[in-house]
Amino acid sequence: MTMQSFTADVIAQPIDKKASKETKALYKNLHTVTKKGIMFGHQDDLAYGVNWKYEPGRSDVKDVVNDYPAVFGWDIGGIEHDKKENLDNVPFDSIRNYIREVYGRGGINTISWHLDNPVSLGQAWDTTKAVASILPNGKAHQKYLLWLDRVAGFLESLKTDQGVYIPVLFRPFHELNGAWFWWGETHCTKEEYITLWRFTVDYLMNKKNLHHLIYVFNTNSFKDEAEFLERYPGNNYADIVSFDVYQFAAANASKAALKKSSLQFQEQLKDNLMVLTAVSKRKNKPAALAETGFEALPDDTWWTQTLFPAIKNFPIAYVLVWRNHGLNSENKMHYYAPYQGQASAEDFRQFYRSGKMLFLKETGKLKLYQ
Image (tube, rainbow, N blue to C red; front, top):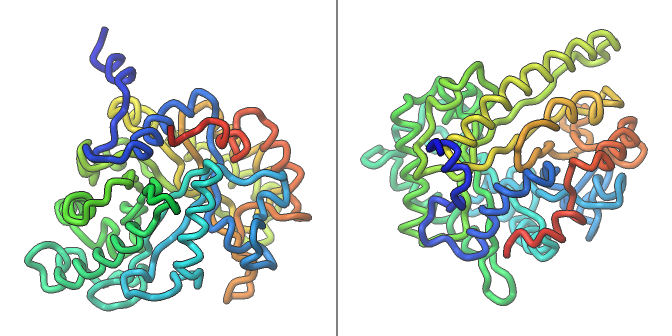
């Protein structure tokens, strides 16, 4: 028996040796769920959709297929300033309640953190150099500790009425090889990024005693395995390996241009998934497509003809599409999942019925926390 085939059979354990039993169970099930299919996820699914906001129980995905996603994404950008609402104006009290609701139904919660730039206090997209400043002995280190304390306060509050901590997939400093966030690869060295990641994990796990977090390492699309792993913090500091990739096309693109864009996207996605799943197997860490989508879904067969063929043969735990904001400040439609009456809704129903994609009715039966 080779070492590689041996490691794949070892029961996977989260990096946190004191992880709660529910967290350990979820982590184990993130490995084994791939035998059944790929879980579907959606950002901010319960909070709002196209033309609606804060309607209890509503979801654009549910409006289309009469089922909720299996994975629900939330963002805590803004918590570092002790704000009442996140960067997309969703109240943190509501996010906490949604997370409880998802857990109660047997779904999975994943949390990203678009934190502001700690040096300039601009948004996450303000690329003023900041990483070195928040590391130990840096001039903004104390500020970063305060911010982490506020993050920890929110994460610590994620409990059931019985006091059981709700496991969450925590995905900080995401899309690390992009240039658009202040923690991106052009704004800090490899050593600085890895130090920041390890410090953050150690602080939340050992200083704040949070034992219900599963840590998600995340890049944007990449050219090869060397790029994907360049800033990997080590097997003791990451639980899940993942990347984000979106399809883009010009507004009002022709059918031919959409087809070309879809083929390029599929090629990129398959190439990256091949690397990701090989790394996942070797390191015995679940793999995920943590963010994807095609804004405003101009291709009405995108689900069955573009996304599904590209992902169906890869053992990834979940795929998550971004949020359904509706009209944005540029008067442009910003959504990534279909809503009732949207052109790709029927295709999404076929995607749902593929037998490979797992939604909440299915994953709720799997008892992911046991």
